[in-house]
Structures are given as structure tokens and as C-alpha cells.
Image (cartoon, rainbow, N blue to C red; front, side, top):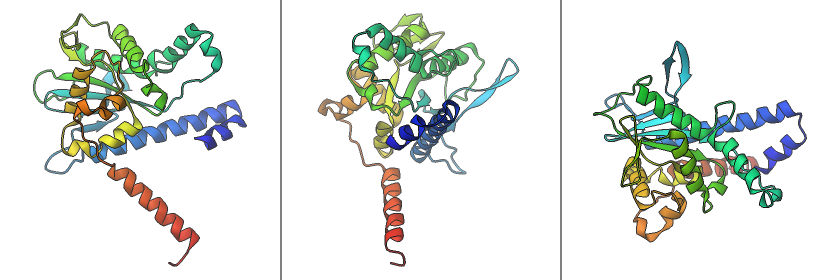
Length: 267
């Protein structure tokens, strides 16, 4: 990422913003490729993955989410963000400024494109009937997932903070004993934050256990989100076996092969 920041530092504002926007789009495409590897479709059995579902609300065509995965009893809604938190040391002296920075990045933005407000909007559209996914049976449990690039979000406290902000914005009618929320007849898990590395590690894990089951186990183990998914998965108590990503391995082999051809052409 150093190269991107170096280029942006010497570029006009609009051009730098375009580069970061292009990187964000590429990040979203990469996350979708990982999900497609986890949920391949075929002619006999359509994929349970829907990339960028969209529909009309009030006569306007809108994108409901970056992706969704439909399980038998669970409906996973994804938002993917390649953003970075500012590590300005001045924040240590002004924690209120840092909290405003966190909220502007991921909770609620004037442009309406902060991940948490987008996830809440998607849930509200389902609750109101303006978005009608084809559920397998009845109303499923909804799992809101933010996939992020910034590993800082795995540090202690961040998952709890954003889960609490999600709860505030969602405004559920009831918090159930297991920590899930009741919202207009829907059952909603607390916010789940996955880094792109987590998603890579889960690619082959879903050959043995469904992603919905993994998210449920994580939510049951830490409903307050005091532990990040990365820390939960690394704990022996999670009993979660992770496997090397096939997509990452294939991409690495291709990069090494291309490098070999450039350095030693004809071999």
C-alpha cells in the first residue's frame, strides 16, 4: 500500500481520490471473488451468493448491499470497505475527535456510504418489505458483516465500539437473551467485522462448515464483540479449523511463474 499512498501524496486532490476509489472498487471485486469461490453455482443448483443485489424502491433503482449469502436459516449481508483509520498521534490527546473520526469512517457519513448505516438501511428495507429476498423458509436470522482492509479494526475495543454503534443505529425493539436483536419481526446478529485476511482463511473452511454456522458460533461466544473474529478463531476454545486459501495460493503461484518468465525467458 506504500506505493498507493506515495502516488496520492503528490497528486491533485481529485486524482488522488479517484485512485483510492479505484482501489476500493478493486478490493470489493476481490472480496466477491473469494465469496464466489466459497459459493460456486452451477446449472443444477444456483449459487446462494448474490453479488450486488439491487431493486427499485420508490421508483428508484438502488443497490441493497455489496453481496448477500442465503443459508437455510441465515441471511448474510455484506458491506466491503477499503478504508484506513487515521493514526494521527494528536488523537491520543483528543479522544472525542478520534471517536468522531471512527463514526465518519464506518458508522454514519453525510454521503450515506458508511458501512454500518448501509447495513442498517438494508435490514430496514427487508423489515419494511421494500426488499424481498427469496428466503428458503420464513424469515431467517440476519447476519450483518463488514469486510474491511484495515487490520487496525481487529485491535481490542474496536469491534465492541462498532457493534454498539450498529445497535444504536438499528434501534432494535428488544435484545434477546443470547445477545441477538429483534427488529420488526427480524432476528439480527450483532455486527460482525471480518478483515479480508479472515475472509481468505474462511474460503476453504466453508467446505467443512457453513459460513453462517461460523458466524453464529462466533456470535454466541462473544455477543458483546469484545474479541475480534481473528482473536476468536485463533483461540483453542473456538474449535475452528482454518485452511490455507486456495485463491491466494493460486494467485501466488501465478505471480511466481510470471516473475520466472520475465527473469528467465524461455525456461
